[in-house]
Image (tube, rainbow, N blue to C red):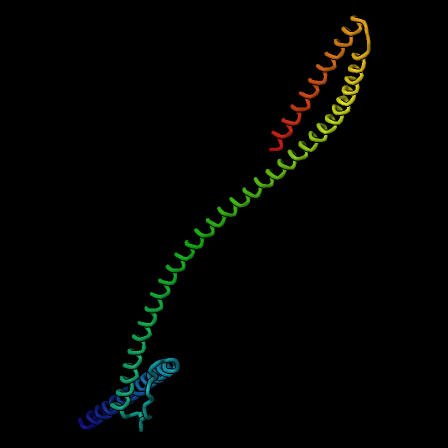
Length: 223
């Protein structure tokens, strides 16, 4: 019985030792995991603290890793700072998002305004282009009219010179007729001369009327 009891005690001792070793191993694993988490928290804290408006105040190193209370207080302090920093950054991000949306709305309003102004400018440019083309057409038409008037004036002046020459010739003939009338002629000769005079007088009157009509037409076209 003692032997069996001894065997049982040894077995229990071995099991207890194994369980204790397993617990120690798990404790070490947990400590290592917690230490890894703590290092990650430190890394995140330092990264965010570099560009933070309120940097994290570094804590003093612990005297021992087994100082659980100190370790937990440091973790809580860093987590509290991280929470506060994330809230601040979230607020800043929301503010920036709001400002960006406002800027986009303003930009869209500005785009619509400038598009409307551009459309107005295009209408003005089209009107100016049309007016310029109309003015060019008017200039071309005016130039053609001036050329035509100059040509007509040249023809009228040429015609007037010819008519003036004819008038001088007729005046010479009139003088000759007057001279003939003063001569002693027979009645038949006088009648014939008077008839010729009336014909020449009619011709002179016709030429004068044509010359007057040409001048009136030229004056009307020039105005």
